[in-house]
Picture 1 (cartoon, one colour):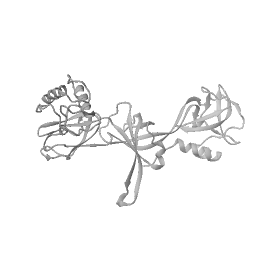
Picture 2: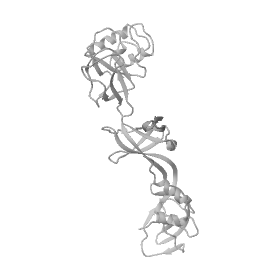
Picture 3: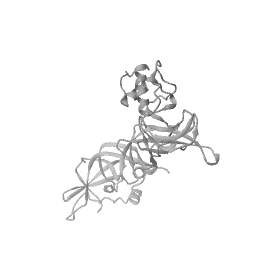
Picture 4: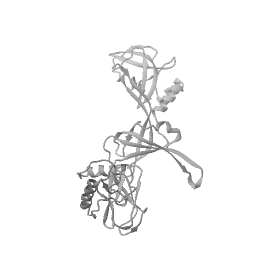
Length: 350
């Protein structure tokens, strides 16, 4: 679905349309001939405010847990245990059981790619030792050398996991991930005989993420680090930050051509709950004007000589002040005019 904007449309029409068109479309009243008037009837007013005015463009998105990662077996055997879909697996706990032995999740960016035992050196040794230390095992120095002290700690860990105490770690016994994971779906079932490379489950991160597919025409909105506003299914509005922008090229239906879209991933600073994939609305910032004078759009008057003005109310006296309009957003408009300042009151329709 395309973008949904209101404030930007108002700005465009007022910027290029004639006064009569503005009166017709927005029902802006025409200013009275006399710049000053007095009346015993109270005039409805609104304050001139100084604020940051932000114009946003809405796009449809999905709240879920981000992209999935497939966990595959590195060994041969029978699947004897699997976590429940939706379960959270943390460091030191099993992602699945093979021949009744746990395949354990550890944290790190380097995949397990070789057996580790006394005498081995490298960054993967340090990564394993960091995990052992985080799990409470001591008696060794966290470095890149797998020495007898490391082997002794591994034996203690293996004992606690119910494994044979070898003091060595095979890559089929562990899986590294950036942090705790959520089991998105299972790819096998208990009792299945599997081998190396067989998919076991798909996992995601545990923190809900928003994803938005954008057309290439809206690519300007997709900036890593940009702040967005996300409307959740219950109507709650929460801030988010763009953390990833990926260009995705896919083949069209029935093999007709290719389409290119921008996939935007958004994270949240505060806790957000997601029972599953749900529809959301994401508002991207199109334009922003900090510390400007603003009035409600309905306070604008169409001046007979062209342009726009506001009727400033001071007690029982009013006067019309011509204004230049700037950004339109959220039902307000940026204005500049002679001697206007925050706190003044302007007339609005009753």
